[in-house]
Image (cartoon, rainbow, N blue to C red):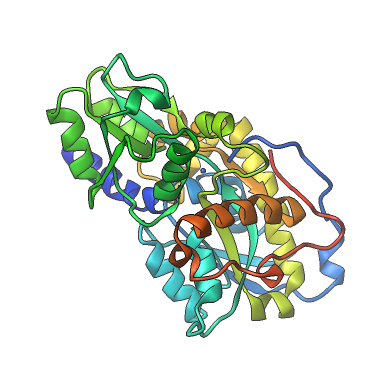
Length: 348
């Protein structure tokens, strides 16, 4: 039974490295107008990735289940495969969905998409950590000449870490070695003396349970803040909406953002309850691990001008490293949805 539970947990985290993080931010004004006066309530189908992209939405999902929202929000946690979420969004099965930050840009730039999309919020910023049993690893410079194992090639983790190494002058001194599954990374941590891995929460907590003396040696988010000048931040996941749905039902999108803000605030302040909801709504597979991971997952809801500033800065970094990673070109202003009533940022 324990092996089965751990296998499920490990499988669930595969998607997390294809998406990698949200820094704490101050709360700004929020649009809280009378939504019922703007148009009739509508059904809103929301597709979520299992793990940090949905672990902070338990309060929102519970309110929707109890019919306490104005619109009818139908949440589906589509497992760990973000490509399935993107495909369902393109088919019109979802109106709103969570995806990795660079995948949102790829979808926007994809001329073959049936459904045009816009990004409406950032749901995670930085949640990556360097794990090892080596007591001599505590800063980026200590990785010189070493191999760092990870999964998620071609996603935010790769580009976040590559840029960080570049800023630290270590691009040619650290070997970044990818593995297709978290099982293989875990095996390396167990079998290779003082192996080093780059992993996100909540996989960090899973790994700690299975590898004696494993520790967080480097908080990549803190390292990023130390090495990267300006406002650029690492962005793991974002929420996107079908452009047609937004044009027809903007009030529903505004309610989604307001409820997401309330939910992330509540879940970060009430971690025990938030962990229970991860089990009830299957946004994660073990509430005890979720309880430890939620405070470290940088869960947030950042919208409007602040979202555009942060996300465009990160996408520019990715574009400069590899233009194909964002679909060949930087998204233009139409990619970013700026809510009405001055909602520039809603975040815990």
